[in-house]
Image (cartoon, rainbow, N blue to C red; front, side):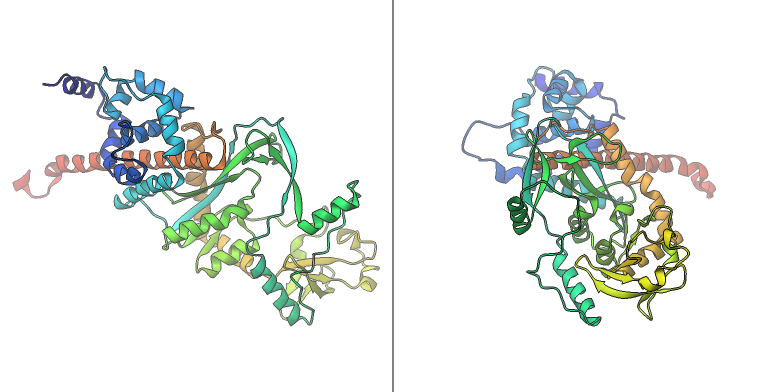
Length: 481
């Protein structure tokens, strides 16, 4: 018998039957990887390459066990019997060098290849009957970038327009015309809000206004990352993984953006990808950051339900509560706490209808100090043209079914992020550039899906075996006892 075969048989006896890598090896057929990477290899040119399945398994080991780098992974593979068995190497064979794995990860594991691997694992989960995408949980988590916060520059970049700006402007102009107002001209610049005095020269201000530029802080080390600033968190350059999962915690989609992109801005891309791949989605579960007029309109118009949390309205400190200002749909006005009507004034470019009070009435109002500090004694209340969709989300929040789904966020999407950071080293990344970080995150989520699939399949097989063994003992027919 060949010596290598004898060594492999010897290694096989040293790997416990309940080891995670054994479960993963039984869960899926890794030979399907050859079909995915076939266009990336040349059959009759160059030296023989390392087996692509081996390369993928090494990257898989890195993400399964939370190893910080491919160099560390190559070292662990070389000295571990379990890893050698999983890759198909004997004790005498030399395992691939980390530079080989690193090169292939950067040049062969393209975005398309990584996406195919991610989809393949999801297909395996679906075939096993564990995927349940009727309720999708969406949220984002920040990943610290490999960038020094002190190495930064201020740059001028074009101000990104909202992707639904055209749709909103059509709605605004239709609303203005219905109220007898002149529609906005698309070429007409919006009136800038009043700000404190700026020392920037008039020439620069005019150029910024004309070109619609905005100032951002950019990292010199990793320009693709974004400066993350939130509450008491430390200011740092980061990426954000906008992620969607099902009720069992299987990750369905992940979109990576710079850390300064708000959750609601990246929602459309995540939502479109998930609903295209899984048309059976019925409910979107997200936190209050996603409770915006546009998102509510998009979800409910698609025939789905947005289950979200209470979002506290921004009102004047120590003033009247927001719910004391009641909108009267029939007369299209707002009633203030003193039962006076605030009449419609205009609809601004941001899609908000403005209702203003009569200063002649407000000047003698006994609770004006709780309502407005305006010098001209005018109270303005705004209501978005898509506010009705937000109210549908509020109605869903009081429904037991959707309230229960929202409470499951801690067991699903929040658990996914906790496991990814605590067990699979996703708190920070050593890669730079949006493309490399995106591939790194997607492979990590693919490894997590595969790990869960392997464990569930093992539990199911054990349960079936127990039923077969114990069934004769509990069979009511004495002939089989």
